[in-house]
Image (cartoon, rainbow, N blue to C red; front, side, top):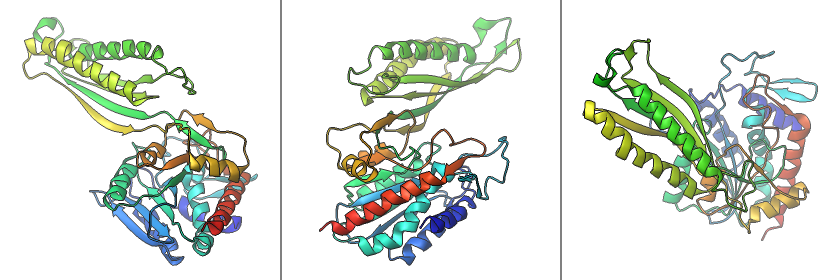
Length: 386
């Protein structure tokens, strides 16, 4: 089985599915293999026609069952110093090198290798395969897929998101909300600051307010929070403005994010910043320039995976992996989107997040073997279900 999985993974790595580019060829490959073992396959393209999700089902057309999910896109290799071609899988020293090997085409390859076996084992509940686009840029494909499942009244019971966790069972992670805030002021000469609206200065005031809120959030951490750190975080990733010393900059842009441990924290930050703009910054800007604006674009708002007291997916994966407990992780996944549809969800997949996004990304062969063992056990569990 592992040799078949390696061949499939080699094929998948050869598709350069960087988020900025199309993933259609890879989706067509996945669809062809799944259809070949009897799966009902649905491909959903985005509005550009260059990206697509795949949702495929083995077994009966009914509620329940399990989703095996992964994202098809990978991060760029630009300016990374690879020792081999990132889009040609290379095996050496017990490792499989290539962009996406661990994040997360290794898991996808394992599920494809197991699909013919699942087709024979599945009985009264379906096995679904969900492969999405643009996870790395805001879980955009998973959001579209969720809306499709709602519209089609497809209601799986469980989901396994195969992100690289070294096959640890992950039952929770923070959300990830990314924003770009743009300021439009009024250009002028630096010698007469009162006659212009300095977008850079208002952007700095905006950042200062974000940092004040960041400090307040530390005191709002739930007592039961198991995250590290236990509170919602805010990060200012970039501030762009200005050109030369003596010109009042008319434009500014801030790229920022927050990682909420609870939805109420995200609402608190967004409400506070909206009030600060409407009550303080904009009135001051518009006293000089009535057309001044502050606009915030939502780049992505990805729900966190909330640990729950009852989680059948957690119970099953603990049984299949043989581990004694679960963990939380700081990085985001699509798991919260599936949880929002009413599924019990865990994150569990081969490889280490420490190798993801880096030059010479790799997946250790023993990790891939562990993943296949868990999926084989899952198949036996499907066969026993009546």
